[in-house]
Structures are given as C-alpha cells and as structure tokens.
View 1 (cartoon, rainbow, N blue to C red):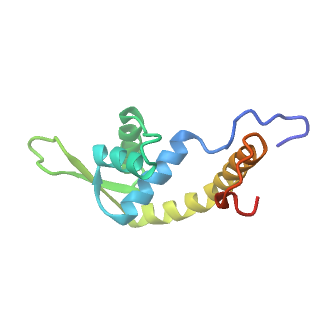
View 2: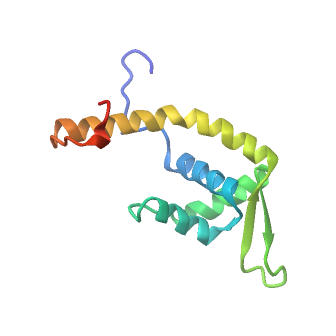
Length: 131
C-alpha cells in the first residue's frame, strides 16, 4: 500500500474469482470432477454457507482449460452433456504457486475475523487460539 492509500476491500485482497480458481484446482488435485459437482463440492466443504455460481464456475473452467491447467473431455461426445476435468502437470505447478501466493491473504482475513469476534462479540473460544 502506498502512503495515504486506503485499503478499501474487506477483509481480504483475495477476490472471489481467485478463491474459486484456487478451490477448483485444489479439488482437481484430488480427483476428476465435472462442473456441477465442483460447485456442489465447494458448497459442501463450506458447510453450505456459500456456493459459487454457475456463471463463475464454467467460465473459470473454460479459462483454466485454455491456459492448459486442466483438461476436459465429454462423457458422451455425441451428446456433450457432461464434461469432466482433470488437472494437468502444469496445472499442478500453477496450483502450488497460487496456493502460496494466497495464503497470506487468507491468514490476514482469518486474523481480522478472529479479532472482530473477540473484540465486538466477546467470543472466547479455543478457535480463537493465539489471538
């Protein structure tokens, strides 16, 4: 941040798109998925508290495929109804890089939320650990 510049985004500088891209690549390091299942899996892992839109998932999948980070194929090429995806070797390397790049931003967000819960809501919980 430059002198006098305000931080306008709260609580993190990690955009929703960056977060979903990171999560898509993370899921694809575990196994192959298709678009709807990726959306459902992210929602499930976030306890249903948030879910990316289809309008975010599918453009990101196309972009990641164009960039060579993932590879897609049709279950039934003649019907083109379900397109499955797997991560490529360069996708794994890209995932490792963005995982490191985004860690500090996620840590900062967590610290902010912990401090808000402690300060405003007087939450005293083992979850707040070293805060």
